[in-house]
Structures are given as C-alpha cells and as structure tokens.
Length: 68
Image (tube, rainbow, N blue to C red; front, side, top):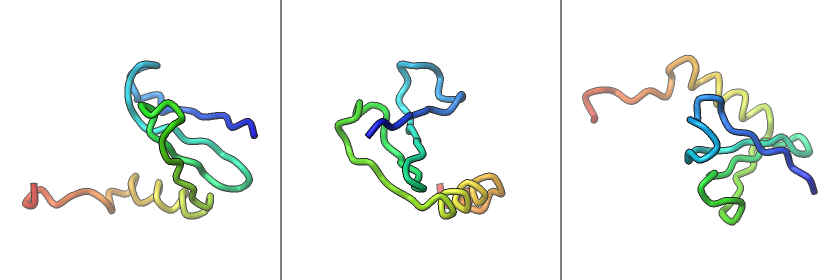
C-alpha cells in the first residue's frame, strides 16, 4: 500500500515536527511526523475531515482567551 504523505507548507521544513496527512481509499490519514511512520495513524472519512477543516478556518474551535 503506497501512501503519499504530505506536510503543510507552514510546517517549517523537512526537519520540523508537525502532522502529515494522506488520502487513501476515501479516507484521510493523519500521523505525527516525528514518529517517522512508527506511531499511530488516525483515519477519518473525507467528509468529516473537510468539516473539521472548515470549523478550524471559521474559528469555531478557537479557545476562549479567558481559559488560558
């Protein structure tokens, strides 16, 4: 199973730690880049992943400043 993992262009380069994502069989796969493929892979249906990204972009998941 060949999976094409990619990082955000905002990740700071090849040696930075962030999450990587890939499309595979209609699912979005997410993993921690610093695990170098040895850690867990989280799987999300593509529609749920798009809804999550839309919520992030809309600020729906921002923390209330008073709780920090």
